[in-house]
Amino acid sequence: MGSFSIWHWLIVLLVVVLIFGTKKLKNIGSDLGGAVKGFKDGVRGGSEGVGEADVPPQQVTAAQRAAADAQTVDVEAKRKS
Image (cartoon, rainbow, N blue to C red; front, side):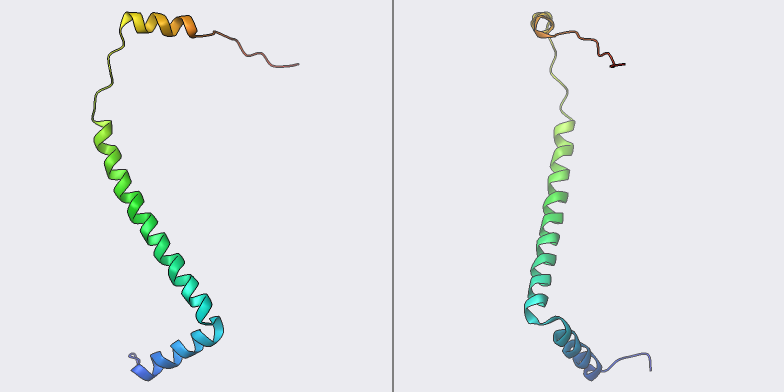
């Protein structure tokens, strides 16, 4: 009673095809494949970012800091009452 024969699975497949249609099932398959591919690319891209984080930041010289300070505008935000 617990196991299904091949005929049970064929009947289930036939019912699914009749309900959804072959075009919709094809679209679902391609969407699922695209999602899996995107997930794999995201995982692969995430592991590459770890190597870049191990690089120490560049030292900022006094001349660079002075040039950055000359371009910085100090403002104070005030709320309208």
